[in-house]
Length: 310
Length: 177
Image (cartoon, rainbow over all chains, first blue to last red):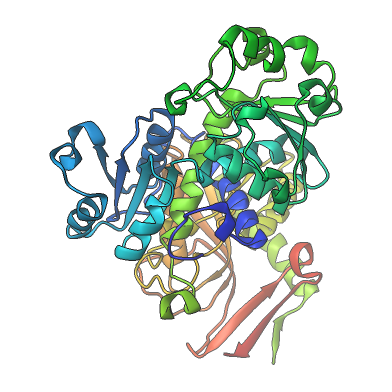
């Protein structure tokens, strides 16, 4: 493994499979009466979150605790960022206390790359702006592989706010790398221009995009990132792009429905679909802990030769 | 390099250990076998089969991966992390007499890790250690209860156990490292 996990783009196929296979072993630890192994004893992990997050932060924290690391949570509201400190200064101050790893969530794309350059600590990207969210894509791939036993050759349809989604970018990179056929659908105003160059098919018709799909992945409408009028109303969005039971019927009979959370019921997904038999949304959350344990464990090892020399 | 145990000898050794286990434990109801990955696992299965033949009692077996419990894991983190494989102990070990099975007993550090891993699953009534080969050079106060073969070695040598299930043939070889 390299020093940091900044994005799916930096990982080789072998590294992706190594993370997924290691996560298989890690999952068993969560099923024991004593859900803890001594592996990262004495390691300090700082969870540095500049954006609100419940699921991802909790997931990382549980993963760190199950591996016996000492964890420290720094949330933006309680930090000196409000007093005018820059990201680099905040990072250097944390670095001075010699943590082994920093898990970073930041609203600016590339924030993790900045930290990776100035910090000796290993950096794990827990979501940077509209760029990447690698551990989410890894846990999605883990969940897909668990249900379908493969990723290559599957039709995976992603529907929703494609423009603001770092989950989308990481997932497209990972799924196309491993040979899935990826379809995207969403309002034209929320489709990033030139996204086809990432090797995906784009359709403004959800019905076309989900036909014959093995996996349907819904993305949240990120109203907090929207400063313009991207679609007329939530009600209209649901009518045209919302995942309803009728639309699910166009997919394969054994389709799985995924959502990275948090869900907006009645906006991008109907409640009966979210809670229905095809939904693996809560499994994704459970698998997230195992995948993050795998990443923490693998990053705690030595740095590759050429990387260390650089 | 010399083959110190061939397939025939290995089969007879395991049968002998199975008899010793049955004799010493007087009743196999609360006994279960747990193999240490990789090669302890097939050995544990073979012993379970042999014990069932002798006692008429079906035996439970499990598999333990000790990677996450190793004492050298984070000390000299220069290379990539060792591969973690799955631990499978599909039964409660509480109040059971556990037979911990490995292929080679050397420094004792693997067994130390295995004991820690096992105790995270519950509180067995006792743990006994079964090894196919004891090659000496202990670094921890650990001793096997059942030994297939005591093999005097130098620390420059390595002992390779091969099993049909993994390596396609049964044998034990000593080689100069």
